[in-house]
Image 1: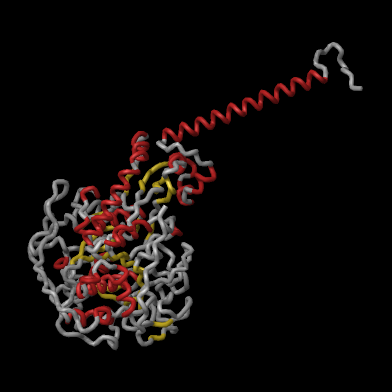
Image 2: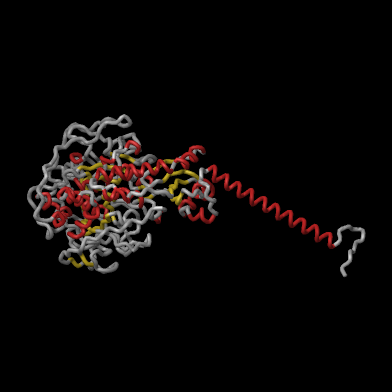
Length: 608
């Protein structure tokens, strides 16, 4: 029997037990009250954020909606830029049945803008109330926000937010130019550039098809628009005056020391890359420098890199501009989708290794495709291993991805990236097609009569953009039917078998469907040539933009004319010297061209 050792004390063992029980009950009650209070605080926070009545997400679910790059760059109170991607995305499937490019473009633009306006306002109001820096985008239904971890988590907790993704700075390892040719030592070529010849483009010119009525857009380091091989083909040049409204946009707003500055009101190239790729697509000075695939086409441009440095926001801003161009100093609200280009050149990348999520750009790329705009994309220069096509936008099914050949041969360039695509789990075959990409001579930004050489899939890409322009010029019935157009180029390509990264195909993960042959795609007998329209300025003045930008020179440059004589094609030797790693591989075996059955493009995955 346990006795009380201190009979004067009133705290007997039974009394102690009662006290402990009472304390336990008090503690339990306090915990319950705390839990209720915490729940109420969470509900109030959700209410203040403008969330719906859905139950709040737990911490694990919220964290899963935030990209690792955002988590890393908001540690220790840091601020970072990130995209708040809404769960409710526009359904663009209705554009598929529309018969013209203008109809498709208008439908896609209106659908995207209406969806963003109907769904973004609660979040925008929450951001305005807190004076948080932000910018709205309609092409992906997302809002770019600059904030800390607390803001990212508050937005991720909302049920109307699908995910929070980063806006990292991306360094594009762009090809370096070779020596610049400029007066008085300009090396005028004796023939058409060998890469152009090897695609059989001159045979198409001889039929009267040089790209008339087609507009090709450059998304790059900008364009030296006054270059003699580019100026005659600029949509904003009427032979007397330059008008950059609807024809040029600069998405570089915060550079330091950039030679073009920020928000340039006229096309400017801060490196050389954009002038070079644009030249390969459309360039011709009318004086022997026949550097472009489709010299009868027009070009417009958007600068999406700061001397090679891009961000997802810069890339998306240019894609919005191409979907519905708008005047200088205006916003996407003044966009006109009827002025959208037909084709865009995209020799840039957004590596997941640098923080770009694999699906950040997918909705924007898909929107351009739905609007009848073909994005032609460089496969990348990460070869020669397999599954090195690993970066957006080259990985997407909607992108027409291009590998590089050693110019004048059917051997893949050693640097050309290869499939299959595994970064998104698709195992997709890439590239889609190949074109000459070494020792390519084209325009330089060093002067109006300057040229240089470069190597890379960047150089192969505009060959395909120009080839698509020639196809649509010669066969207008295919214009803006992207699936049928890609099938036409794919089926006419010279198949090059390779088992390096899987099946020999076609297609395969080294050459895709093979080396482009635009003459075969156009076919014979040839269609009836169309007359070349008289050049006119397509841009108009706007109250929110400049009416017309002054031209640095008042001398009109003559428009290039098509060469009327077809040149030898498949046996033409390469005369340019590669400037980068352009070692041929020994596994390529050119074979006779097969006639594969046109394949349907994969159905894009549903967007969240």
